[in-house]
Amino acid sequence: MAANVETMFSVREKPWHGLGTIVREAPTSADAIRLAGLDWHVVQEPIYTNFNKLVDGYRANVRSTDRKVLGVVSERYKVVQNVEAFSFTDELLGRGVRYETAGSLQEGRKVWLLARLPREYIIAGDRISPYLVFSNTHDGSGSVKVAITPVRVVCNNTLNLALGTAKRSFSMIHTGNIQDKIQEAKDTLFMAEEYMDCLGIEFEQLRRQKVTDAQVKEYIELLLPMEKEPTPIQSKNIIRLREDMMKRYYDAPDLQKVGNNAYRFLNAVSDFATHSDPLRRTENYNENLFARTVDGNPIIDRAYQMVKAA
Image 1 (tube, one colour):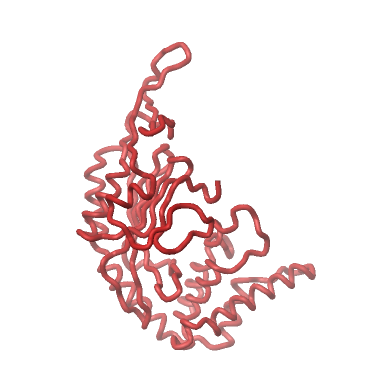
Image 2: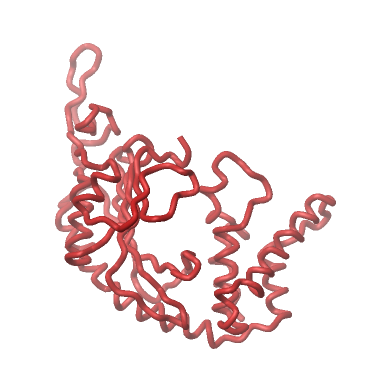
C-alpha cells in the first residue's frame, strides 16, 4: 500500500498518496481517533511453541479488533495505547485542541497524530503555526516520539531547520514507569512557548543576515555539486536542479518581500527539498523528499550550516 498507510484522516488537504478520509474541519480527539481508524487497543498475550510450551520472557502485541499480531516484545515492554496518545495531546494542549492528521501505518505497527497548537506566531513577517506530532510503535521496533514542529502557513512548508536553541522533541522507550515518562514529556513540551520564542530570535537573526546574488549562486552550487567528469545527462540534470532552486529563491511569491537574506535562502532550500521533482522517480520517491542529502547530511541542515558559517 502506498506510503504504508493503513488508515488515516486529513483535514481539507488530500495527501499525495490519495489515501484516507478527508474532513472539512479539524476534529476533537473523540472524533479524530475514530476517523483515523485508531479506535482499537493492544492486548498482550502469552506466546506458545507448536508443542504448546510457553515462551518465557516474551509477549505478543495483538490488535483487539482483528486479532492481528503487531509484534513480539519482551515482558518488560509497556504498551502505550492509541487513546493514551490522544489523551496526552489533549492534556498538553488544553481543551479545544484540534487534530490535523492521524492514522495507522504498516498494518497498525506504527501510529501517529498531528495536532495544531492553539497559538500562532508572527516571526520574521511570517505566520508560524506550531504543530505537535506524536508517533508510536506497537511492534517493539521503536520508541514513543513527540515533537513540536513549526509550519509556514503561507506555503504549507515545514521549516525543518537544525536549531539547537531549545528542546523541541522528546523520546521514551516502552520500558520502566511509562506514566512517569509521559509526565516528563509533558513537562518538557510545556516549554513549547519558550521554543517558539527562541525560534523567533533565530529567524530574526537569519533575516538580518544579508545574502548577495553571488553567495546564492555559490551556496546552490555547493548544495548541488557537479561530478568531476559528468556525463551530458548528469550535467543537464544538475543544471536543471540548480535552476529550480534558484527560481524558488527569486520567484516564490511568498518570499518577494522578505529581502535578500539567509532566511529567504533557507526557505527556498526547504521548498526545493519538499516539493521539487527528483531526478529519478521511484515507487516511494514522495516519501523520501526530505532525505535529499549533501555529504551525508539533509540538504536543509547543510544549507543552514553554510549560512551560519558565513
